[in-house]
Amino acid sequence: MADTIVDAVSHALDEAPGRNFRETVDLAVNLRDLDLNDPSKRVDESIVLPSGTGQDTQIVVFATGETAVRAEDVADQVLGTSELEDLGDDTDAAKDLADETDFFVAEAGLMQDIGRYLGTVLGPRGKMPTPLQPDDDVVETVNRMKNTVQLRSRDRRTFHTRVGADDMSPDEIAENIDVIIRRLEATLEKGPLNIDSIFVKTTMGPSVEVPA
Image (cartoon, rainbow, N blue to C red; front, side, top):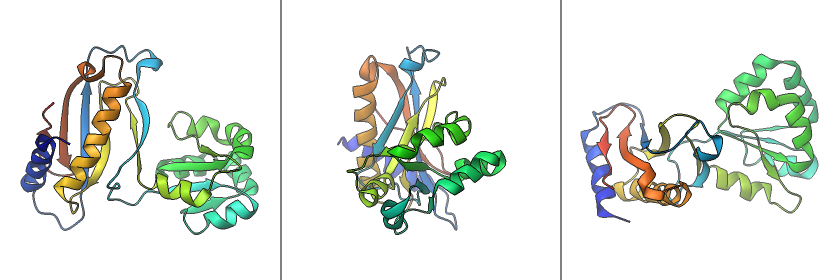
């Protein structure tokens, strides 16, 4: 991990005005030389942050039976088939749930029903559930997703993602940023050449450029 990332994070934290609440630390990525009107060229990646997000991540699980029972201990909500059908009949409630939830997880056998009842709400928001296969451990999956962020550019040259909180150490936040940059460089068509600039900032603080 480059010392320049740690230095940029330290600067961003030092320059942030004092607040009486815990601030998020965000990363802004500016892309270049990409035709983002072509969906195949867009960034759409889930990344597990090694130091965690520093924030609460809202996760809803669609499950039945034993999987639902086990999910109760780790998920914010566990919804069964009847709740799924109710959401299908109440678009406003479905939109509210989608907007306040970071990630959805669902037993693979429920994915077809979720597509039918909630596809038009979750799909455009990029929040279709992660399918849970029969051999997958729902507790392990949910705990992993609590430390996950979504990188999604859509058709915009600039996009943002959460990389920590202001009470985390610069090293922890920099480690998260390093993982994100490495993933982007491996995923983008021309690697680092498709990255124009990267900035880090707290919620209310000034932006500090992360040197390439």
